[in-house]
Image (cartoon, rainbow, N blue to C red; front, side, top):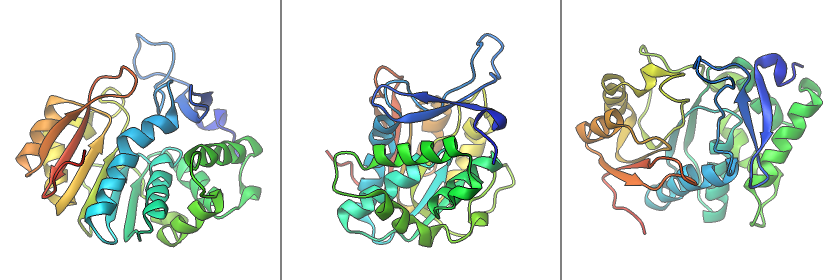
Length: 252
């Protein structure tokens, strides 16, 4: 039952009251602190803007959609998908999640199945805190979120480890939620050649791609694989985000 610090993270409270994780060590020698998973202005608010809206869009245009999530982290995106599906009274066909840190995969799964005995008390409380942030402003319960996701994460091994250049996918996805750490931390995942190859395999004929980033390499890869690449406003002063649409129209 390792603590957050023991796996290299610290918890931060963001401005909307929701928690996020920050790396204790930085890969950038010019910075004394590691990279945070979310904007300090609001971990949940940022997730809802970038990925929750994208999930709602997918659910509106596709029955039982398949979702690909790169960067499980604490599980915000997975919970956002469950939230939007519950609110829309829609089914989720599949969620394929990738996370390089093994403890984060284990923590999320054990929390999802209420195995609090397998988690450090602070870790358990952080997940409960996160989930309560996700259901804020709705009539949903944390248990409803968990029950929506459990059939999609039947075993801990369903959650994949890091996405590498040797990836193999068994299906295509209607919603691709791309939430990898920055190019300084994960350079491969933002290279145009990798993105083009990934999207050509992963994206269904009707699909939506959403990410907090707005890189030239990303937009080029989207266009090369049949997406319309739309520049969206970033979250609270962040540089622009990107929405990719393939076979669907933009919603207002």
